[in-house]
Image (cartoon, rainbow, N blue to C red; front, top):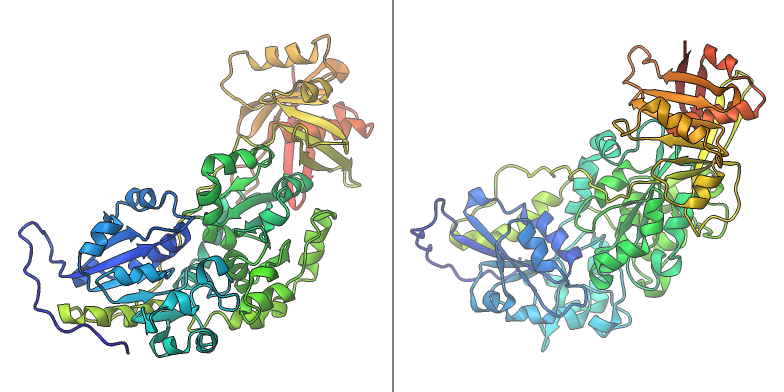
Length: 566
């Protein structure tokens, strides 16, 4: 064990305190990534044990933008770096080490802020062979080891530390990965997380993950989010994007959102950098990623993986993440993306990357207790003792993705099957990013692009409580002299629509019956209009619709009943 500070007399209980907080702990962050991991760790220091926690930002990182606002937004106690240096603490905890932390008057415990220690960052370490967090330059000063304890998630990292900074090995401690334990504990909430991401009704979720740097997915394939979200049928797939917090900090939220605007118009969900990525990974079916920790944790969850970038040029070759990048299957960003996803699912063998995963994540399920066993002894001189009960990992929060209105124009294909059901596929259409139609266009009343409205075969009003009455709205658009519409639809309720067919000037009311034991169905007016158009294009009659229609979108089946106008 590291040398502990000498015993101090118990601090006098402040006149202003409602509860006693004798032990003072400082959380030290350099980046948003390290700050979010720090918040995980600090929840293991229980306030009922008399522990007060403050936070400070260790200056100097190019990725420090917005850090103080992050802590303040959580309601945490925040000290300036200058104030933190002037005060004494019983313990300082950091999830990213820097030599300037030696100026703190506290024993320092450092831990990883991702899945282990993997990335070579020569700019900060001055070492082309040692990954950030295990380098001599970060961990020592004038030959003296700065941290009182160095947390590792696997014994393999201690062996690597012995090569990069051997004098630090005596203070290395196996603590596991509390972030992973929280992810694993949260798996039973998969349906909840999927619901919050809008991934129900048979849709499957593809999560795109990009770390930072030119070697990342976004650095190598900046258009991949847009290409992927427009390459997948929208009724069968949802696409969510997880970006490393350093991307947001370096390039600003405004510019990141602007870069992603077209993809978000097509339906891309964007997880904010503070939280939500863990829930998205749990909710996912596929993960398209790179060498970032999010992709690695996805492998540990046995998700179907495809790497669009490997990052091998900036990884420690001896790290498990480098081995993972060498072993994981690849995605060709210029190939048929849908076909590659389906093929990857068919050939999915988690065993391909099991060895590097096992070499990175040890002591699974024990990380909470191991973290406490490292931190609490530094507080013993304040009469703070290790809690008797094992701290179970908390489930991760529900995701709150950032999203736009979503697609307002679809490129539609479909066919009438032998059982008279209609199989429909809809691809989002984005202005200036659409070259050739697969079938016909279906647009919603929210579409503002004149070309799509003028060339559409289907127009649907999605607003239920609108200014113009449903029948008047339908006739206005179908009978317009410049209209090329075959079908116009307006929503009447979540499960009811009114349709007007140009052929025969037929007005129909449609509703989706609720099967026994099933939730109340949703009837998308744009999907309904597309399905009816496919039916009519197959030389089926409008009168035959009186028998009802079965609409298939992937594995989802929606039964629709029609009533003609008297």
